[in-house]
Length: 305
Image (cartoon, rainbow, N blue to C red):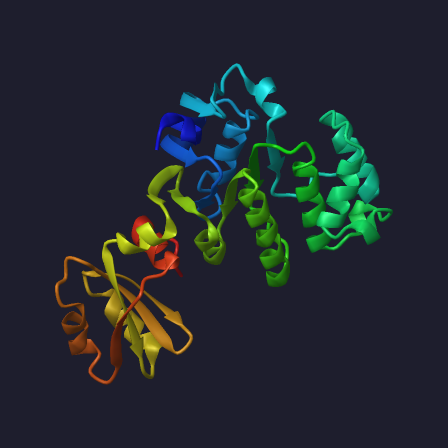
């Protein structure tokens, strides 16, 4: 992929707050037209990274190129080409849906008078256009925020944990809108701590303590995660879990329903044989890895309960 195919490139991007390193020496390549995810726990640096890439926060060191422009010094030029949906609802509660959309359109200098009506229909907000934004449900606020973020048809859209306050159905509907935008050429960066959302991304980076632990497509990450996954079925799984985690080659063991999901370092040639002495009354089966397994191996299991 040649250089012009990347919408975002960073080299050594770092942000410090006193002694805290929020983003640490990050190298990143985001291809044009993809949905690129930042996956990680709260406090891992996702929001700080997005704020730097949107020009709202200056890096402590390192370089970033966004839409072919060096970020530093071109923040104002880039504002008209990017959209940003914040983690918390940032529109005006005491304005109606229509008033909020007109305000955002005025800020971005949108002259096309049909743009608002198009977005009202597209995001199922026609019945709410006279409703105060502060009285809307979480899913309605989410759709309004997305409609406003793309009011000016940005080439690049940043979404900071956009579905953290909505139910599963609204989350699925929201992602359908994102795939529509991506299909029409918009590059999307989305931060999340939901594994199912991360699997929907074309590519993603796993972040921990400001450090990129892994990146690639979900399939690539699952194929190269460096561990074998074994599901254990049987009774008294809680006491078995403790015995398994005491084995040195076991990266983690977590319960999922009536099964234990055990991750074993792939240097072990016969992982089932390794577990058999403590699992004599249990059924053992090697299974396909998930993105959650990738996250656990990338972070050393530090964020699994």
